[in-house]
Length: 126
Image (tube, rainbow, N blue to C red; front, side, top):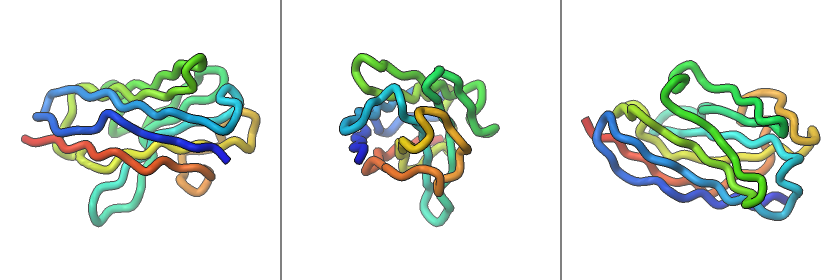
């Protein structure tokens, strides 16, 4: 079982930046597909972006060009750098892992991910 712990959330004004971290344990990190999701009150959980074992990333259209996913395999840590934040980015952010495909990702649908962190809140004010 992969254990995931997010950190780095907070409150910022529109246009600001935040960096989220997700520390992973309990599995060989290099063989896990990792992803970020977010969920705003009253809305469904949506995929933000993913990264596979080869470092290939894919982003939702709403964050492309503003958010960047990176990872430090030595630290078993996933990052989400969020720039040019907008009020509509306000949500609980979760990291998730899919360890079933040797580190390759199938999709950015929540159902494909079997391990989840507890979430970290991001609030962007106008």
